[in-house]
Image (cartoon, rainbow, N blue to C red):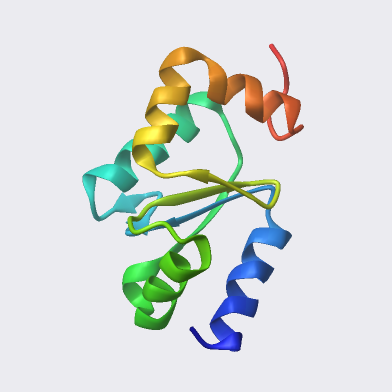
Length: 110
Protein backbone atom coordinates (compact mmCIF):
# COMPACT_ATOMS: atom_id res chain seq x y z
CA UNK A 1 0.00 0.00 0.00
CA UNK A 2 1.36 3.40 -0.92
CA UNK A 3 2.02 6.00 1.75
CA UNK A 4 -0.33 8.31 -0.18
CA UNK A 5 -3.37 6.07 0.16
CA UNK A 6 -2.49 5.31 3.77
CA UNK A 7 -2.29 9.04 4.57
CA UNK A 8 -5.54 9.68 2.69
CA UNK A 9 -7.35 6.97 4.64
CA UNK A 10 -6.01 8.25 7.96
CA UNK A 11 -7.04 11.79 7.00
CA UNK A 12 -10.62 10.73 6.25
CA UNK A 13 -10.85 8.82 9.53
CA UNK A 14 -9.32 11.67 11.55
CA UNK A 15 -11.49 14.38 9.97
CA UNK A 16 -14.84 12.69 10.64
CA UNK A 17 -16.27 11.41 13.94
CA UNK A 18 -18.01 8.58 12.03
CA UNK A 19 -16.69 7.48 8.65
CA UNK A 20 -17.83 4.61 6.42
CA UNK A 21 -15.85 3.10 3.56
CA UNK A 22 -18.62 1.58 1.45
CA UNK A 23 -19.72 0.39 -1.95
CA UNK A 24 -21.85 3.17 -3.38
CA UNK A 25 -23.17 6.17 -1.49
CA UNK A 26 -25.62 6.57 1.39
CA UNK A 27 -28.32 7.60 -1.09
CA UNK A 28 -27.42 4.78 -3.51
CA UNK A 29 -25.64 1.88 -1.76
CA UNK A 30 -24.33 -0.66 -4.27
CA UNK A 31 -24.32 -3.75 -2.08
CA UNK A 32 -26.62 -5.13 0.55
CA UNK A 33 -24.05 -4.91 3.33
CA UNK A 34 -23.44 -1.21 2.67
CA UNK A 35 -27.21 -0.65 2.51
CA UNK A 36 -27.61 -2.34 5.90
CA UNK A 37 -24.94 -0.15 7.51
CA UNK A 38 -26.54 2.99 6.03
CA UNK A 39 -29.96 1.89 7.32
CA UNK A 40 -28.60 1.29 10.82
CA UNK A 41 -26.77 4.62 11.03
CA UNK A 42 -29.72 6.51 9.55
CA UNK A 43 -32.12 4.79 11.96
CA UNK A 44 -29.97 5.88 14.90
CA UNK A 45 -29.73 9.42 13.53
CA UNK A 46 -25.95 9.35 13.34
CA UNK A 47 -24.21 11.98 11.26
CA UNK A 48 -21.48 10.34 9.20
CA UNK A 49 -19.38 10.79 6.11
CA UNK A 50 -18.52 8.10 3.59
CA UNK A 51 -16.58 7.34 0.47
CA UNK A 52 -17.45 5.07 -2.41
CA UNK A 53 -14.54 2.65 -2.73
CA UNK A 54 -15.85 1.46 -6.11
CA UNK A 55 -14.67 4.75 -7.64
CA UNK A 56 -11.06 4.30 -6.50
CA UNK A 57 -9.30 0.90 -6.90
CA UNK A 58 -6.29 2.04 -4.85
CA UNK A 59 -8.56 3.06 -1.96
CA UNK A 60 -10.59 -0.16 -2.33
CA UNK A 61 -7.52 -2.30 -1.68
CA UNK A 62 -5.86 0.25 0.57
CA UNK A 63 -8.60 0.24 3.19
CA UNK A 64 -8.49 -3.55 3.41
CA UNK A 65 -4.73 -3.42 4.01
CA UNK A 66 -5.04 -0.46 6.40
CA UNK A 67 -7.53 -2.20 8.68
CA UNK A 68 -6.40 -5.76 8.04
CA UNK A 69 -10.10 -6.47 7.42
CA UNK A 70 -11.04 -8.16 4.13
CA UNK A 71 -14.56 -6.84 3.56
CA UNK A 72 -16.44 -3.64 2.83
CA UNK A 73 -18.16 -1.70 4.36
CA UNK A 74 -15.89 -0.61 7.17
CA UNK A 75 -17.00 1.75 9.93
CA UNK A 76 -14.73 4.00 11.96
CA UNK A 77 -15.88 5.84 15.08
CA UNK A 78 -13.67 8.56 16.55
CA UNK A 79 -10.65 7.15 14.75
CA UNK A 80 -11.20 3.55 15.83
CA UNK A 81 -12.16 0.69 13.54
CA UNK A 82 -15.56 -0.61 14.62
CA UNK A 83 -15.97 -3.38 12.05
CA UNK A 84 -18.18 -4.22 9.12
CA UNK A 85 -21.83 -4.96 8.52
CA UNK A 86 -22.14 -8.07 10.68
CA UNK A 87 -20.55 -6.43 13.72
CA UNK A 88 -22.60 -3.24 13.27
CA UNK A 89 -25.79 -5.31 12.92
CA UNK A 90 -25.08 -7.38 16.04
CA UNK A 91 -24.16 -4.29 18.06
CA UNK A 92 -27.29 -2.47 16.83
CA UNK A 93 -29.57 -5.37 17.75
CA UNK A 94 -28.08 -5.67 21.25
CA UNK A 95 -28.13 -1.92 21.89
CA UNK A 96 -24.33 -1.80 22.14
CA UNK A 97 -23.93 0.37 19.04
CA UNK A 98 -26.19 3.13 20.32
CA UNK A 99 -24.44 3.02 23.70
CA UNK A 100 -20.99 3.20 22.09
CA UNK A 101 -21.99 6.13 19.88
CA UNK A 102 -23.39 7.97 22.89
CA UNK A 103 -20.23 7.28 24.93
CA UNK A 104 -18.05 8.54 22.06
CA UNK A 105 -20.15 11.71 21.85
CA UNK A 106 -21.31 11.22 18.26
CA UNK A 107 -24.93 10.54 19.23
CA UNK A 108 -26.93 12.38 21.87
CA UNK A 109 -28.28 10.22 24.66
CA UNK A 110 -32.05 9.95 24.57
